[in-house]
Image 1 (cartoon, rainbow, N blue to C red):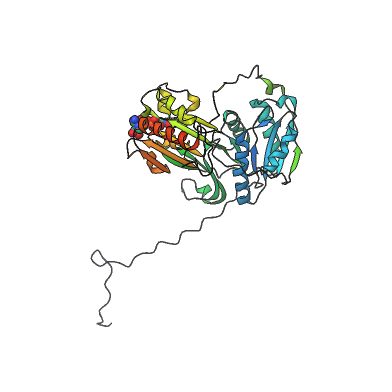
Image 2: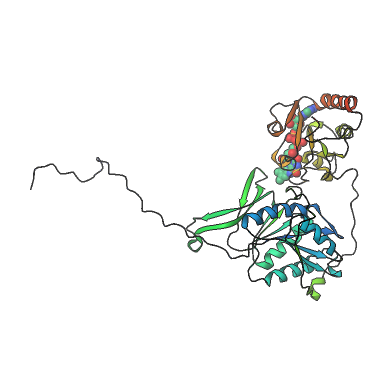
Amino acid sequence: MTDTPQPSAPNAETPSAPVTPPAAEPLPTIVTPSNKEVVIIAEHFKGTLQPVTYELLGIGRDLADKLGGKLSCFLLGFNIKEQAQSLIAAGADEVYLADHPELELYRTLPYKRVITEFIKGWELPPHIVLLGSSTTGRDLAPRVAACLGTGLTADCTELDIGPYEHTNKADPDKLGIYPGCLYAIRPSFGESLKARILGPWNNPQMATARPGTFIPLKPDANRTGVVTDIPINLQGEDFRLSVLEIVHEISKGVDLADAEVIVSGGYGLGSADGFKLMEELAACFKNSGVGASRKVVDVGWIPYQNQIGQTGKTVRPKLYIACGISGAIQHRVGMDKSTTIIAINKDASAPIFKFAHHGIVGDVYQVVPELIAQLKAAQGSCPTVKEPALV
Ligand SMILES: Cc1cc2nc3c(=O)[nH]c(=O)nc-3n(C[C@H](O)[C@H](O)[C@H](O)COP(=O)(O)OP(=O)(O)OC[C@H]3O[C@@H](n4cnc5c(N)ncnc54)[C@H](O)[C@@H]3O)c2cc1C
């Protein structure tokens, strides 16, 4: 025994040394089987490919390159073979062609059968399948997803690839790091948040993409690719619906999706008459159109076809002039990829000034007539917009 004072046992008054928690087990990497292929489902009307198909090929090429896989495209229709080359020029490595009179016009069941039966025959499923969130894509995508036993994120505005770390102990079987996960990003909660939606458990991971959101690649006529005819085994039950007539809505003026300049009016115009001023300003530019916020569509000042935003059109003009529009997030998501945004609003604290490139604080009824007068005086009555923009 010694009289050297012994260290006393730790108690409430004497702080103990910090306890290092046991090192956490590293999470296993879980690779969900796939052939790494990104598949686009092309959309056309009577053989004319729709712009959203080229937009999907643009983002699809990026995703396929990140995965180190192939970009392919389903093309279903009749007498449509010559379009396959334009899909290859726009980024596809392979086109799966189904050419048949019964596929000339889109119908849900025949299209679903051809696509899903072909994919189900693959040894490994594709990694990703993308469609446009157009009327056709919104109809077809859930059918294809259900038939392939996978999930679907609708109406995405961003798509990317990355890992996902699943640490939720409520799913002990699923704990792990999933590489090559599709980040399907879309506005959520009334478009006040961006949600990143993941479905790493099954391949293909599926999404629809909002038309007008992604940028097509510059077509390259020298790109080479493979065109593969695929089996078509339609059944009697696929013809429960027949197309009797296609009625087109005749819209006045330029299609806003193609307009280089959009002059948009909001509730700050005060009445429907304010849109005459918007038309006058739009007429100062070639290839221009008039847009609107939802609030003015809801009160009946202008038809729905002019609405820009979450529940309207997504546009990407060279110049967007917002007149008397507050800049709510639901409007912003439809126009904030415009090259140049000019906002005219009498309230200096209006949210639109936070993302407009140029702002004019003032009354639309003073500013716009002055703008029209100056444009007419400086450039004649119809100037052409040049990159990056007029102003
Ligand atoms: C689910 C959901 C979906 C939606 N989808 C859409 C959509 O697709 N598109 C869309 O636009 N909205 C959409 N909305 C509505 C959106 O939230 C806004 O209510 C709407 O965009 C507001 O329209 P506004 O800017 O014209 O009107 P307000 O918010 O009333 O703004 C009017 C602006 O005009 C200014 N002003 C007033 N008088 C003048 C004047 N004389 N001169 C200059 N400025 C003036 C004011 O300062 C104000 O900033 C959606 C909402 C929800 C919940």
